Image 1 (cartoon, one colour):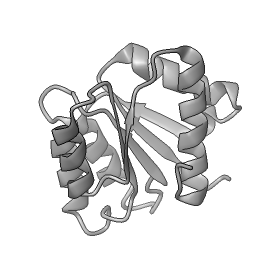
Image 2 (tube, rainbow, N blue to C red):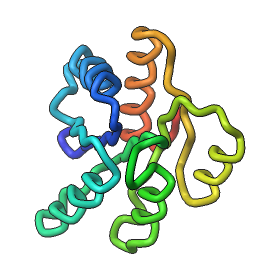
Image 3 (tube, rainbow, N blue to C red):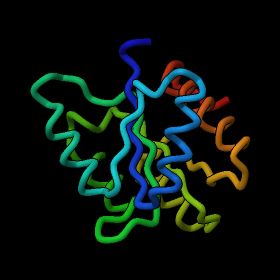
Image 4 (cartoon, rainbow, N blue to C red):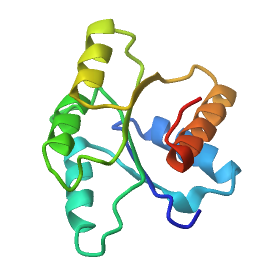
Length: 137
Protein backbone atom coordinates (compact mmCIF):
# COMPACT_ATOMS: atom_id res chain seq x y z
CA UNK A 1 0.00 0.00 0.00
CA UNK A 2 2.92 2.39 0.59
CA UNK A 3 3.71 2.29 -3.13
CA UNK A 4 0.29 3.59 -4.16
CA UNK A 5 0.42 7.23 -5.25
CA UNK A 6 -2.51 9.01 -6.87
CA UNK A 7 -2.12 12.33 -8.67
CA UNK A 8 -5.27 14.41 -9.21
CA UNK A 9 -5.43 17.46 -11.49
CA UNK A 10 -8.50 19.67 -11.26
CA UNK A 11 -8.74 23.44 -11.65
CA UNK A 12 -11.75 23.61 -9.30
CA UNK A 13 -10.54 23.99 -5.69
CA UNK A 14 -13.83 22.66 -4.33
CA UNK A 15 -13.60 19.49 -6.42
CA UNK A 16 -10.00 18.96 -5.26
CA UNK A 17 -11.03 19.47 -1.63
CA UNK A 18 -13.94 17.03 -1.89
CA UNK A 19 -11.70 14.34 -3.37
CA UNK A 20 -8.99 14.96 -0.76
CA UNK A 21 -11.62 14.74 1.99
CA UNK A 22 -12.91 11.47 0.54
CA UNK A 23 -9.42 9.95 0.68
CA UNK A 24 -8.88 11.38 4.16
CA UNK A 25 -12.04 9.67 5.40
CA UNK A 26 -10.56 6.37 4.20
CA UNK A 27 -7.31 7.19 6.08
CA UNK A 28 -5.60 7.49 2.70
CA UNK A 29 -4.82 11.20 2.51
CA UNK A 30 -1.11 10.33 2.31
CA UNK A 31 -1.49 8.70 -1.12
CA UNK A 32 -3.16 11.55 -3.00
CA UNK A 33 -1.43 14.65 -4.31
CA UNK A 34 -3.54 17.37 -5.94
CA UNK A 35 -2.53 19.96 -8.50
CA UNK A 36 -4.60 22.58 -10.29
CA UNK A 37 -3.60 22.33 -13.93
CA UNK A 38 -2.30 20.22 -16.76
CA UNK A 39 0.97 22.15 -16.64
CA UNK A 40 1.31 21.26 -12.96
CA UNK A 41 0.90 17.56 -13.80
CA UNK A 42 3.76 17.74 -16.29
CA UNK A 43 5.96 19.64 -13.80
CA UNK A 44 5.15 17.09 -11.08
CA UNK A 45 5.98 14.15 -13.34
CA UNK A 46 9.25 15.77 -14.43
CA UNK A 47 10.20 16.32 -10.77
CA UNK A 48 9.67 12.62 -10.00
CA UNK A 49 11.97 11.24 -12.68
CA UNK A 50 15.08 11.28 -10.49
CA UNK A 51 13.55 9.50 -7.49
CA UNK A 52 11.49 7.12 -9.66
CA UNK A 53 8.32 7.81 -7.66
CA UNK A 54 5.84 8.26 -10.45
CA UNK A 55 2.15 8.03 -9.55
CA UNK A 56 0.28 4.73 -9.69
CA UNK A 57 -2.71 6.56 -11.15
CA UNK A 58 -3.50 9.99 -12.58
CA UNK A 59 -7.02 11.37 -12.22
CA UNK A 60 -7.45 14.16 -14.72
CA UNK A 61 -10.19 16.77 -15.06
CA UNK A 62 -11.11 17.38 -18.68
CA UNK A 63 -12.12 21.05 -18.65
CA UNK A 64 -9.16 23.04 -17.37
CA UNK A 65 -7.89 26.38 -18.69
CA UNK A 66 -4.70 26.67 -20.76
CA UNK A 67 -3.70 22.99 -21.00
CA UNK A 68 -6.95 21.03 -20.87
CA UNK A 69 -7.34 17.39 -19.92
CA UNK A 70 -7.14 16.09 -23.48
CA UNK A 71 -3.92 18.02 -24.14
CA UNK A 72 -2.46 16.83 -20.83
CA UNK A 73 -3.40 13.22 -21.59
CA UNK A 74 -1.72 13.45 -25.01
CA UNK A 75 1.42 14.94 -23.43
CA UNK A 76 1.58 12.12 -20.86
CA UNK A 77 1.04 9.37 -23.44
CA UNK A 78 3.66 10.89 -25.78
CA UNK A 79 6.45 10.49 -23.20
CA UNK A 80 7.64 6.89 -23.07
CA UNK A 81 8.55 6.82 -19.37
CA UNK A 82 5.04 8.13 -18.47
CA UNK A 83 3.03 6.21 -21.05
CA UNK A 84 2.33 3.26 -18.74
CA UNK A 85 0.84 5.43 -15.96
CA UNK A 86 -2.91 4.80 -16.00
CA UNK A 87 -5.00 7.95 -16.51
CA UNK A 88 -8.67 8.24 -15.63
CA UNK A 89 -10.56 11.24 -16.97
CA UNK A 90 -12.80 12.69 -14.24
CA UNK A 91 -15.18 15.25 -15.69
CA UNK A 92 -18.63 16.78 -15.53
CA UNK A 93 -18.89 16.43 -19.30
CA UNK A 94 -21.13 13.69 -20.67
CA UNK A 95 -20.16 14.49 -24.26
CA UNK A 96 -19.71 11.17 -26.09
CA UNK A 97 -17.22 12.64 -28.58
CA UNK A 98 -14.97 13.90 -25.75
CA UNK A 99 -15.20 10.57 -23.95
CA UNK A 100 -14.31 8.60 -27.09
CA UNK A 101 -11.42 10.95 -27.91
CA UNK A 102 -9.97 10.48 -24.42
CA UNK A 103 -10.29 6.69 -24.57
CA UNK A 104 -8.74 6.65 -28.06
CA UNK A 105 -5.85 8.81 -26.77
CA UNK A 106 -5.07 6.33 -24.01
CA UNK A 107 -7.24 7.04 -20.98
CA UNK A 108 -8.04 3.89 -19.01
CA UNK A 109 -11.53 5.10 -18.25
CA UNK A 110 -13.81 8.12 -18.29
CA UNK A 111 -15.71 8.79 -15.06
CA UNK A 112 -18.40 11.45 -14.78
CA UNK A 113 -18.05 13.47 -11.58
CA UNK A 114 -20.68 12.45 -9.05
CA UNK A 115 -23.46 14.78 -7.91
CA UNK A 116 -23.35 14.00 -4.17
CA UNK A 117 -20.64 13.78 -1.55
CA UNK A 118 -21.53 10.15 -0.79
CA UNK A 119 -21.11 9.27 -4.47
CA UNK A 120 -17.78 11.10 -4.46
CA UNK A 121 -16.63 8.95 -1.53
CA UNK A 122 -17.65 5.82 -3.46
CA UNK A 123 -15.78 7.10 -6.52
CA UNK A 124 -12.64 7.78 -4.45
CA UNK A 125 -12.82 4.18 -3.20
CA UNK A 126 -13.11 2.97 -6.81
CA UNK A 127 -10.06 5.05 -7.77
CA UNK A 128 -8.09 3.57 -4.88
CA UNK A 129 -9.17 0.05 -5.83
CA UNK A 130 -8.12 0.77 -9.43
CA UNK A 131 -4.69 1.94 -8.25
CA UNK A 132 -4.36 -1.38 -6.40
CA UNK A 133 -5.75 -3.74 -9.02
CA UNK A 134 -5.95 -1.96 -12.37
CA UNK A 135 -9.71 -2.46 -12.59
CA UNK A 136 -12.62 -0.09 -11.93
CA UNK A 137 -15.11 -2.92 -11.31
